[in-house]
Length: 213
Image (cartoon, helix red, strand yellow):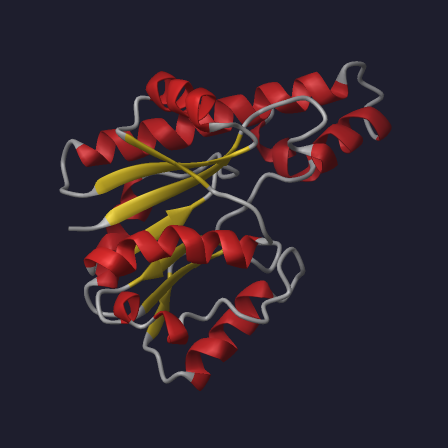
């Protein structure tokens, strides 16, 4: 059994997509930029959830919504709205800490795990199918993002049992060398790794432009 974890921040004005909101305000001069960015984040989360739900009908895995910005009751209501079967809170800490916390659920049950975010307009079921297939043959599967990070992290069956080898410590989260540093850590632990096609996270107005018109 496999788990696919959707890392999602509750769409709230001023608390999500702040870089996009700033671009909408400063570059385009649009009013209510925070509300507009929040609506975009809402659509992205709905899209990601729909892709995961659709694939779950065809393949056996456990979809999980991992939420930040809400308490347990509100997170459960959001889970129901998105149509995903399980919800967990991300908890506190930097991204690496929150990723490790979610992956530990897989560790406890020996369950290979894929982690994705909700910033990918072009996410599709073929990408996730490819990731699942590659995870059968590699310790680590990464989906490179155009900003130097990654849009997908996969931890295979052997690696999920060895948290001390997960390439999450010392990574400069949010910087342009996240992917490079992760691969360096993987090589240091002699992990087999593979890369999926590069995709474009939506963080700035320039990322959204190709989807206009």
